[in-house]
Image (cartoon, rainbow, N blue to C red):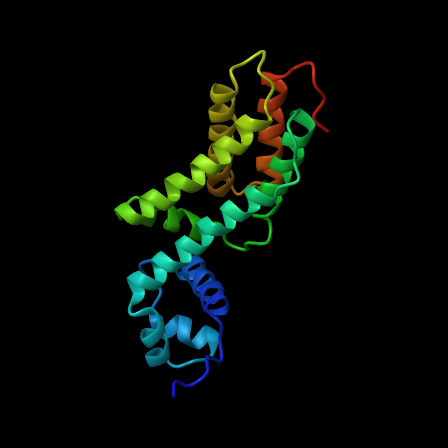
Length: 189
């Protein structure tokens, strides 16, 4: 009879993501995750096989969280709901003490075809959610959505390297500015 699991996969994957963000995907070890969760390295290997599998499972879970977010998002079409959704997405990054860990995850995403596919799906989900909320004029929604998404991602990178005020506040302000340029007759407050 197998022993009961003392820690859920969700608990382990959350701990693994935290460790990966703190140490980076190439530097974290199964021992680091096991210590963070409070179980043996052997138990972790029994459940997740190896470091690469655990990394992939963390990113699969992250992608599922993005899917779930947009599947249940209560933000309808229009510029005000779009602005509310973008502020919500950006503010979700606020609790991360060291966003530089995300840069390392992005780097690892492009090193592995499976992780690249998951990253592409997450980006496509964000793009589709932005485009779905944009009006048909004055700019084609697909084009405007790519511009908005590029500004958000660029603001993230710029904010990380320039150590400005809160990263989320910086990204939100840059997003507000591009929305104001694209839709000057609308107030984004």
